[in-house]
Image 1: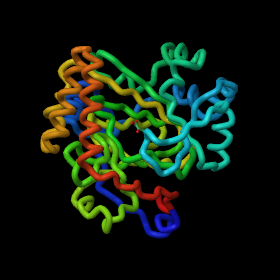
Image 2: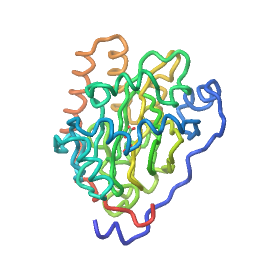
Image 3: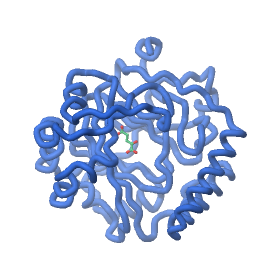
Amino acid sequence: MKASAIAPRRRYPLVERREGIDRESLERDYLARNRPVIVSVVDVASRTHWDLATLRATYGDCAIDAEETEQVYVGQRARRRLPLSALIDGVLAGDVALRCKGLELLSTIDGMKAQLAASPPPSDRLLPTTTASTRRALWVAPKGTMSSFHHDGNSDNYNWQIEGEKLFVLARPDRFDELYAHGSAESPINPFHPDLGRFPRFASAAPLEATLRPGEVLLVPKYWWHCVYTAQPSVNLNTWFSFRGEISPWRALAGAPLLHRSCAALAAEMKRRELFRLASATRRLWYAAYERLADHPRPEPRGELLDP
Ligand SMILES: O=C(O)CCC(=O)C(=O)O
């Protein structure tokens, strides 16, 4: 933690920004080519529905499951149940112990789902017209915390920043080896302070970075690895989606190791055919293979960055 606070963080080439791009161009130039991009949306009124103060005033009494921010892989992180107001007070006071990925939040808290239906996030205006399904999460995080370096599988993702700033590092889907992937979707590396002695192949991972500010939407395309640092107390709302004509997993993962590419494509195809049990059996087999074949490197420390 200390070491990472002393050295300047690594910097990477920036993700492209496109002002005023329409949804057709976004689909053609970025979604269909599996490339990330940042766009701005007109959203001041929408943001005031979801900022920390409004969330606290409206839903503060509701119990939520927050995630401990300890430096472990996602599946191993402990959760703590507490009122949303207590989490937000901690976030505003700079307590880095907990953050919340509100996947269930939006459907279980009375009123949130209705609010979302009545006033959808402005990033919805960028969804392809053939969008078939969406899933959302609301993220509430204190400054100085970090997600793991992971990818979201076969879903494109619009990340709408509501309050505060987040710093994303992204790496292409085929960078599986350079990221020393654990399981199918997580990396032990802290890309802001990578230890190239432990992880020398990361030197050729060629990541990109993006600072996401209120009113901006980042497209994280399917299978793109991302690690997210919270640079200021933050709320963001993301939407995973699939649409007609989207790029296939096989194409999106061109260049990735064959085992990874085939298992991902197989699992996604089964899911598409609604063979959910088979899809999850495929994933379990694939993880089991990795458990046996691959190392399980201890995740690198993730500390506060001096220079986000
Ligand atoms: O905002 C974050 O902290 C993480 C976002 C993320 O991982 C995602 O949208 O998939």
